Every structure is written in C-alpha cells, then in structure tokens.
Image (tube, rainbow, N blue to C red):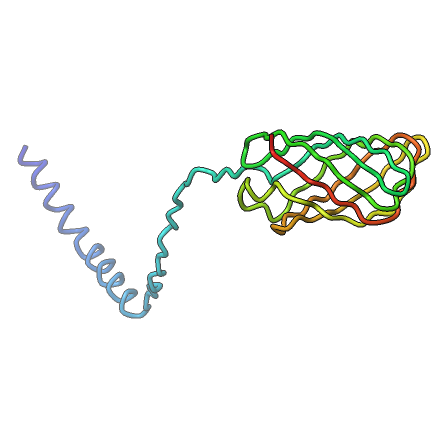
Length: 175
C-alpha cells in the first residue's frame, strides 16, 4: 500500500509542472482575446386578442309584391306584398292610380327598401315615374319614394298587354 501511495505521490509531482503550464496558457488566452457579448434584444410582448362574439344584424329591409293593373289613359292597380324588416315579415296591401296607363298587366316584383328607420315609416303614398311596354312577358325596374323618404327599388316581371308612360302613385298600408 505504501508503494501505491508513493507511486501516486511521485506521479503527481512529475505531472505538476505540465498542468501548471496549461493553466498559465489558459490565462494568457483569455487576456489576449476579448469576448463580445451581444446586447440583449428588446422583448415585445405578444398582443392580447380579446374574442368578442360576432355581431349579428338583421338583413336590410326587403319587399316582395304581386300587383295587377288595368287602364285606359288612367289606370288603377291593386296588390299584396310582404315586407321583411328587422328579422320579421309584415303583410301589406297596395292600391294605386297611374296616368298614361293603357292595357292590363300583372306584375311580380321584389326589391330593396332604403331609409326605413321604423316600421311606421313604411306605410304611405309612394310616387314613381315609369315608362315601359308589356306584350306577353317582360321585365322592368321601378324606384319609388314616399313622404317619409323611404325608397323602394323594385325589379319586376310583367305579364299581359300594356303601355305605361307617366306618373304613378301607390298607397301602401300595413295589414
């Protein structure tokens, strides 16, 4: 056992100068080189996204209308329709007079309603100027406005025999 201890002691004494030289070299390398440490990058926080439920709005006001007319210079018309407003449907009736209407025709129409703030503004007298002819089947467009500023723009399909050239007035009443 003494031999092992004396061998280990002798070995450590023999190797000591070699380790001290490496330690000295390591100190010299560190003194000669400068290590660059990068600046810390600014950290921007992740944006917080707040989920809100989707806003659901009712579709814009819309009408569907079926109207019949007959005229010989002065024409009369009558019909029924449905108004879709704020998610509800409301039935209405139409009665009208026209100047410059000749013949008999049936019209089926649909279209957008603009400037309708409340249901009570829908009823009233609508005025329009129209020019058109129907011989068999035809299509036409018509825009009319009432005294409350409500505008109805209709795209229609007509059937019959008639000529329209002039002013029209329609009384619309909610049922």
